[in-house]
Length: 88
Image (spheres, one colour):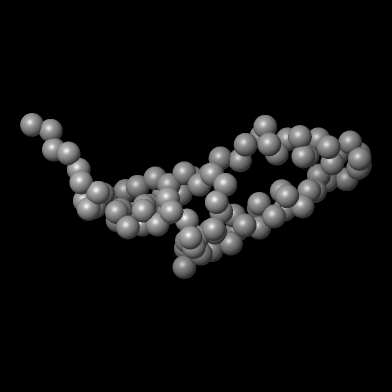
């Protein structure tokens, strides 16, 4: 007989896919993962279909420099803050 897990059950390990909400507070998926799992792995996929046009556009205007875009810098800074918060 197969046992159906109830929402109140606890799991050993959970996976939280972080998509656009890069906050450690007020993040529903992260909250549920931490609530129901002993250990949580967080995963984020940086989508090149979004990031590459930003890099290409910047490089077209600044051929000799490293690509910089405030949106990319913001995303990387937010990921760094999220990493620090999760490790605390």
